[in-house]
Image (cartoon, rainbow, N blue to C red):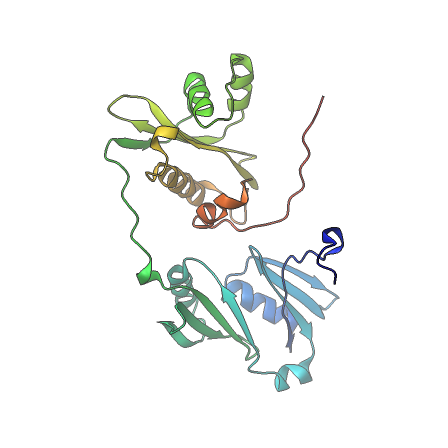
Length: 273
């Protein structure tokens, strides 16, 4: 295709392998209960096609017993973060791990599971023991689970260049629906140097909003500590299969991926009056 005509170029989202299986329902049950993929869909009654997904990883299954036998040994390669935690999870679920977690010559770690139909699923990620150890949070900083006050929020927002809400009523309205929040405090000055807000229905959906670190404290792991504390709260309090979302610019995607977030599609509309 003519690369100069950008508007006519296809936009790819992801690729989904389709595996031939002998029993769609049994396969989906295995992928959910043993491999941990939380979401599914099926077609037909009884199902002759279906799929599972986990974040942005999707795998489809097609009922074809004869081809399922002849295609045993087909493989799927899945790249992930926090590979060690996933490996321990699969060990606990008694997955048939045919190749243990090991560092590979090409600079990644990998292990392989043989799933219920005889297909091989390899999970891989960066070699964890080569990852640089993160710097510690400055000793003067304390992370606390509470909402920022109106003035604290306004000062942080002005510091990061998001504008100053001089209207106290507007700022109060912004903070009113917050379900949970964390703030970073400078214990020496007593000032708040960062915050992260969490909105949602408290059951099925949560939205991470306004992760802000004062410009004088950026690059010192304050934002990481805020997100770690917010993530711990979600892991303790959020319902199973609850969706947690956020919006961020592309350059910050690697930061949020370390907390389990994955890229996804979204539709936005700004109200202009």
